[in-house]
Image 1: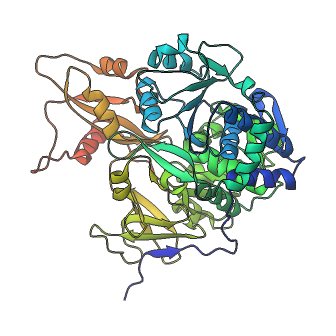
Image 2: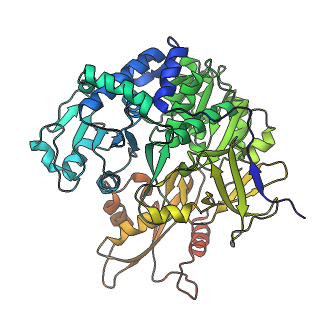
Image 3: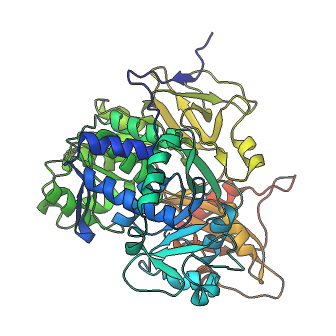
Length: 562
C-alpha cells in the first residue's frame, strides 16, 4: 500500500504560550542593552530596554485615547520606526492591529476600514505617489472641522481617531509624536493589569489577503499564531541574539512583521530597517554598514541587488542566512545568492497569510539542490496533507491540493463565517488552494494553484477583485483578468475586455481609470479588447486558454523555477 502524502512536524522545542507584549518584555529583561531596532533612514538606534519603554509610552497613550482591548487600530504606512512601535504598543494594550497595504488607494482603504470597524488609524502623511492625508480627507471631509479623536464620518462611520506621522499638523488628526505623552499613572497601571489579563489565544492582528474571489478578506491572527511562527522561522535559520536581520520587505505583510520583527524579539536579535521602501543599493549598504548576518527578500529584490553595477563594492561578508520567499524562486538566482552574497545558509519558505504564514521551510544544512527545487520540509508542530478533488489524501509524490493544520491556522476571516467555513474544514484543515507534491523524504514542491490567484513580485492579487473594479466602468460589458509569466515579477496581470456595443475605450483609458483608485500592482499590465471569451459548455471562462494565447502572442517564456 502506498504511503500517504501526510507530514507532521516534530520539534525539540515546545510552542511558546505567551502574548507578544510579554515576549517583548522578556526580551527587554534578558537583553536590555542589546540593539533591538536600527532604522537607517530615520537615524534610529534603540536597545531592547528603550524599545519596550517607547512601546509602553505609546500603549499608555492609546489607552488614554479610549482604546480598549479588542478595538481595531489600522496602520497605513511604509516601513518606519513608528510602524514597529505601533505593532508592539497595540500588542501591549490588547488592541487588534490592522495592517493596511501602503499601496492601497481610496477604494481599498474605505473597504478595509469599514470591514473591520477600525476605531483608530495611524497613517503616514505621504509615501511616493500616495498622498495619504489627501485620500483620507476625500473619504472623510468631516476631518477638517472635527476635534482630534472625535471624527464622525458618513463614509467611515466607525473611525474616531486619526493619528498622523510627521510633524506637520492636519485638522482633525493627532500627531503621532504627541500620543506617548498622553498616558498618565492610571494608564500605566492599566497596562500592568493587561499584561496579566491578555491571553495568547486572543486575536491581535488582522491582515487583508487577496483571496481568489471578490474583495480582500481579513485573516484574523492570534498572539499564539504569529509569535510561534516567528519563533520557528528563526529556529530554522539558527537565530540567536548575535544575529542582525536586514528587513527590506514590507511590515504590512507577514514577511516583515512576523518572520522579521517577531522572529527577532523572541531571539533577542536586531531588526535592521534599510529604508521606508525597497531600494537595492540602500539595502546592500545597510547590510555592509550594520554587519547584518541575515537578509530577507522576494526573488525580484535579490535580482535587483545582484544586478547593481556597483554590487562588488559592498562588503557582504557578514551575511550567513536569510529567506527568499513570496513567489517562485528562479534556480539561477538562488545559486548566485549563495555564491555571490555569502548566504550559504539561505532558506526558502512557503506559506500563506492565513497560516501565520510559514508551514514549510528549507534547512540551513539542506543540500543546495533541495533548496532550489523544493520549499523544504514541514515546520515543527504543523501538519500537512495533500488531497485530490474528492478530498482523499493522495499517495506520496502525487499532486493535489495542500492542506495544513496546527497552531498556525488563523482564527478565521473577520466577519466572514461562510468564507471561513469554505477555507477551514470541520477537522481544522486550512485548504490553501495550492497544488503541491510531497516526496518520500518530506520535501514539498509547489506546482501550481487550484484557483487563479496571481502572484506578482510577492503580491497576491485576486483577479476577481480587479474584475469587479473594472466592471464599474460604464463602457465595459465583460472582463477576465489572469496572470501571464514575467521574467522580473514572476507574473504580470493581463485583462481581456469586452466593450458594450457602440462604446470606445483603449489601453490608456483602462489604466487611467485604475490610476489612484486601486493599488498600482493591481493595474493590468497587458490589456486586450476582445469580442468573445473562450468558455466551457457550462459557461465557465477558460482562463488557461486566454493565458496560453497571450503567452504565444507576446512571445513570453515560462521561467525555470524552483
